[in-house]
Amino acid sequence: MRRIADLPARALAGVGLLAATATLAGGCAAGTTDAGPAGPRSAGVQQSLDRLAGQIGGGLDDRRAGQLLTYVAYQRPIRDCMADAGFDYTPPRFVNPYEHWPAVRPLSMYDEIVPVDPAHVTANGLYVAADLARTPTPDSDDPGHDRLNKAGKAGYGAQVDKCEPPSKQYQDVGTPALAAKLFGDLDTLVGSVAGTSKVKAHSAGYATCMARRGISAANREELTGVVRDSYAALLDTESGRLAVATTSPQFVTAKAGEQAAAQADANCRRAAYELTLALLEPKLAAFEADHATELTRLAADWADVRARAAQAEKTIDW
Image 1: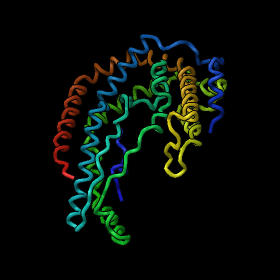
Image 2: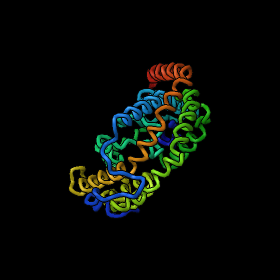
Image 3: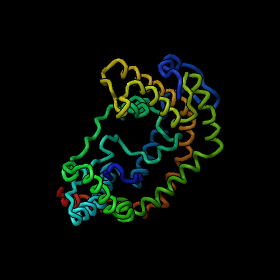
Image 4: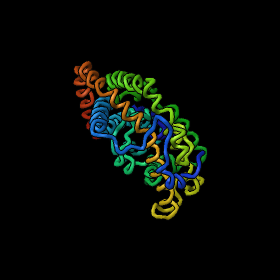
């Protein structure tokens, strides 16, 4: 049976992590640095980039509103269709996927612009421990399905599939069309800077730098996989959730390894990060000036999304 978690997203092997704690003072390859925190200039550019990306991709309230509109546009037709077919269908409760997000950084797929400051590293690590420690959302009750026998449940599930609305009715209902256009423009801008030969040269030593710290990873995606593997022995084999308390020595040790890996990552990316933001600074100002009219219009579009979501939430009667 299709649940809201199954909706298409619209978003907009490692070695000794614990040993890495002892090797954080080790040197790195050319093109990386162990210098201190990023300076005020980088911090200012990061704030400008985050603000601009949030204006385009929506803040946390905007994204919740967009998800709620998608939820209603998807679930209401199923509920009505199921009722017409003689079934008592209870949609799953709405779950805000951004509830635990501290902020929105829509362009964080670029390693070159992920913050390297100690406060960010300490607060977030690589997000693995926070994700594993989060209490999972309980399944929603659906008595109209649960009280049926095996054959009835099969018929119920088949009818849900028949009642599912076409994607064009719900996929884009919560996202302004202009957001996708401007996000593409900003993505192109950041990608053009991150892909320059100067930035690539500063990033080239990342794997060697991490290896000297006892960690085998060519980029942040690989590093996150390494860190996730370090928690594997602490997870329930069936659910994939934590099988130990977050206060247990095993979890505390694994989290310390994650923090060590995150700090190593920040140190090994710092030179590329600072250069990328320095190159972006004048381009961001030009981008905002060139798109000023569109950004103003998009702010109104996001306000409309929030207003429509507020009305739609009042109509949820299940």
